[in-house]
Length: 168
Image (cartoon, rainbow, N blue to C red):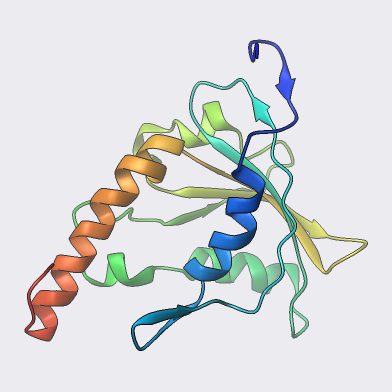
C-alpha cells in the first residue's frame, strides 16, 4: 500500500487493539489480574503519511458535567507517578494544552525537541453527540514505543525502591 500523499483507511489489528487495550491500561490491578475500566471505546484508524507522531480525534462523555476550563485545567495539572518520582525520562509537562484552533500538529508539537515525551491536546470543544471532543498528538517513537518502555522501567525500579522491594 502506498502511503505517500495518501490516506490508508485501515490498519490491521489497530482498531481492535485500541478498543480492548485502553480499558486495561486505564483499569486497576485486582490481585494477580487487571480489572478493565468499564468505559466503552469505538475506534477507527487510518494511516496518514507523517514523519513522526500519532494523532487521535477523541470524543468523550463524562459522568459529571465539566466546563471547558475545568477540562483544560485537569489536563494542565496532570503530573502522574513518573513526575512524582522525578524520573529522568518523565516530561516536565506530561500534557501540553494548545489554545490555537489549528493545533496540535505532528510537525510542530510531537516533534518539538523540548517536549518529545509530552502529549499535546488541542481543539477542546463541545461535542453534539457526547460531551466534549479534542485532538491529541504524541511522538510515536519517543513518547510511544521506546520512550514509554524506558519510562515504565524507571517507574518499576522507583516503585520497588520506595516499597523496599526489588524490581523484576
